[in-house]
Length: 140
Image (tube, rainbow, N blue to C red; front, side):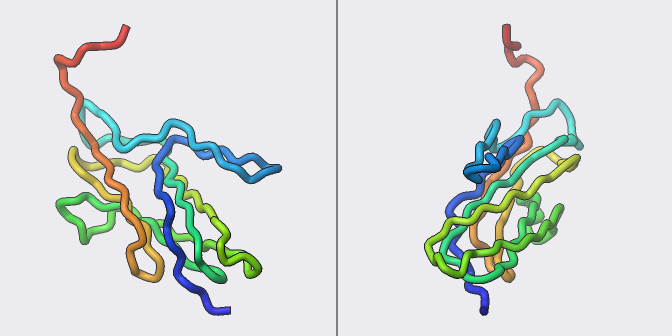
C-alpha cells in the first residue's frame, strides 16, 4: 500500500508524555513554549515533542527538525520516525512522540520546531530561549 501524507493536528512541547498502557491515552506533563536561562549555551535535560496526525495511509515517514530562526536553513537537530496508520480506519488519529535529551541551545532568541513528511512541512512550533533578568522578583 502506498503511503499518503497525513494532516498534522497538533505539535506540543512538554517535559514528559505518559501513555496509559490499557487505553493508549496520553498525558502531556508541563507543556511550554520556551525556557529561561541566565546564560547561553543552555542545556535542556529532556524535552518531548508530541504530534498527532490523521488522514494518512500506510507507513508514513515523519521528521522533526529544530532550527535557530536567524539561520532557518541550518538544522540544529533532525529526528525521524514512522507513523503507521491502520488500513481499516482512514479517520484514525495517530500520535508520535520525539524525546530529546540533553540538547544544548546555543543562543538566546527564537527557534522553530518543524514537522515534515517527505520534505513537505506539516506544522511548526515556535520556541524561545530568553535571558532571565537579574532584577526579576523571586518567588516566595
